[in-house]
Amino acid sequence: MSQFLRFSNLSPARQALVRLCQAINHGSIEDLEVRHSEPVFDPWPVTLRDVKLDSDEGPRPELSLDDFVVSDEIVRLLKRLDEMRCGTLRRIEVHAGLPRRMLVESQVGGASEVPPRPVRRAQ
Image (tube, rainbow, N blue to C red):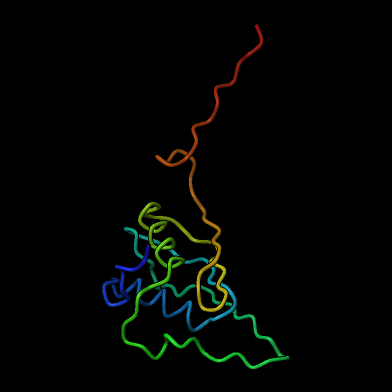
């Protein structure tokens, strides 16, 4: 899936998001704004790192690389950004430097939302 998408092909904002995931390694990114399908870092999102005290976890090896093929998880995250266009990612859970889950804030009524069912009134 990601064999054709390289880090160097991403916009600077998307590269910053990938690097942030790698730097956190384990933890989460919270309250990340998305505008025009791009992550916005002004204001900077809250980042939480989950630090294990019983072992040493080294940094992600990709942090030292200028270019690499992005993972399927990154591809799926970027696809979600494209789909949502504007909004807030309340939380992106990061494990081993990769986004694994996310909590998305959205408004009902968008094209991808399920329309409300009509209410039947008793007669």
